Image (cartoon, rainbow, N blue to C red; front, side):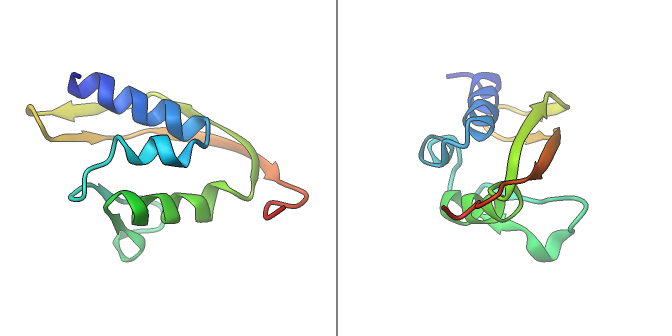
Length: 94
C-alpha cells in the first residue's frame, strides 16, 4: 500500500468514526498534534491517538474532513487537514 493510500484510508476511517479501522493505519511511532491545542496535548501511537481524537470528535453530531497537504519521504509522512463539525450530540455517551 502506498503512503498516499495509507493516509487517505486513515482519513476515511476517521470520517466514519471507525476507531478500530483507524488504528490499523497508525504506527506506534505515529504522533498526532492538534495545532490549535498545541504540543502538550499531543498523542503517540494508535491507542493514545484514538483517545485524543475522541475527546474532540465524539461530542460532535457530525464532521467532515477536507484533504490537505501531505508530504512524504517514503515510509514517513506528515499530513495536514481541516475539518468542520456541527453541533454537539444530544447524548454523546449514549
